[in-house]
Structures are given as C-alpha cells and as structure tokens.
Length: 220
Ligand code: ADP
Ligand code: MG
Image (tube, rainbow, N blue to C red; front, side, top):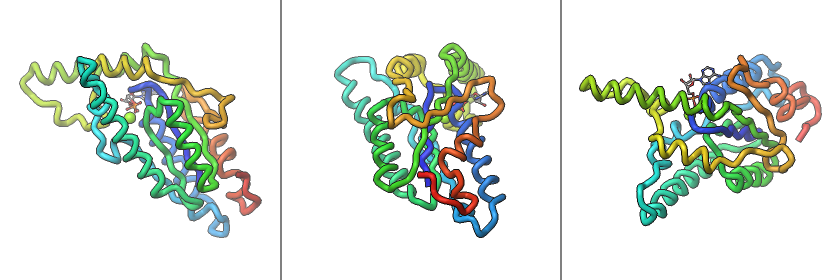
C-alpha cells in the first residue's frame, strides 16, 4: 500500500528506525482480523544495503574532473532504488525506503510514483542533530583505524555499519535538503528525534492505512 520515505543525515539512525517501523507494521498487520482487507499487506524494506549498493557510490573524488563519475555512480544507485520501489509498490505492499533521500527532487519523483499507483505516501524525518550523527561516523572511523593498526580487518563490520569517509559524510550533510511539511511531496511529514524510544508508529499507520484496516473506507 503506502510508500514510507525515510530521510536524514548519514549515520543519523535511519536503518535503526526503518527496522523498528518494519517490525511494528508486521506485528500490527498480523494482529488484524483475516476479514480486514489490510491483513494481507506485505512489508518491504528497501535500502542501499538490501540492494548491495556500496557506501563508496557517495564518495567524493578529489578533483572536479572526477565529479561527473561520482555523480554518475549516485545516479545509477538512484535508478536501482527507483526500479526496486517500482517493482513492489502496489495496493498490497507497504514499502519502507531506508536511505538519506536527501535530494528534494528525488523525493518528488518518489511521491509521483506513489501517486501513479494511487497509493499514499509519507516522509519520516530522522531529525538527529548534525553533531550527534557526525559522532557516530567518527566512532566508526576510529574503530576502522584501530582495527587496521592492529593488523586486522574490520571484517566483522557489515556494510551497513561501515563509516563514510569524512569528506563524503560532510558533503552529504552539505547537500542535504531538509524536508518541508508544506511541500506536498514531503507531506504528511513525521519526525523522530534521537532520544525518542520509538517512531510515531500509530500516527503513521493512521495516516497511511487508517480505517481501511478495520474494513472501513479507504483513507487515501
Ligand atoms: P544510518 O542508517 O542513518 O546510517 P544507523 O541506523 O545505522 O544510521 O545508526 C547508526 C548507529 O547509531 C547504529 O549503531 C545504531 O545502533 C545507533 N543508533 C541509531 N539511532 C539511535 C538512537 N535513537 N539511539 C541510540 N543509538 C542509535
Ligand atoms: Mg543505514
């Protein structure tokens, strides 16, 4: 059914929130009566990680002549993500898109895709302050350096938990385009803060699935 677009700085906690939301939705759906039209909804979590897109597509090359290829790799990554969303988005599927989704025009494109298949969408802003998010990345960089100094490889660290190179991280923050609840492609907009135990899951459910779950009218 709906498309849920996460957005936030790199290492702001998007994957953590995406997983929380996924388990909330799965248990909410399984608690529905089998007569409810929403009891057959499937939940899909799509991210760079699930599509095997490596962190380094966001890396910056040092000189401007390489910038094209850098942007091209990001563009390719977006095309892969777009195709994956398009493949599963339907009236029977909830898609959680875990990623920075930091370009306004890209969020607009995803919004249009949801509109095209007549399904609702929303944006969830993981509103972690920049210093906190940077701290998480710095910690990962230090761990990697320590592992390298010890002659080991950080093999036990999965791709999802790999650091971004510092300049790349700073550049992603620099390019980040904050969501705006007044823009129709960013609305409805939900925000989750670092200190929050949970996302506003009930409000997200009500906005996207709503009374449809109880067999009532669709709230699209
Ligand atoms: P992102 O997907 O945005 O890069 P992650 O979800 O991988 O970020 O989170 C980065 C790190 O911060 C992880 O180790 C995660 O467990 C931790 N983390 C994320 N959100 C929180 C939070 N709200 N409170 C405490 N730790 C968090
Ligand atoms: Mg992540």
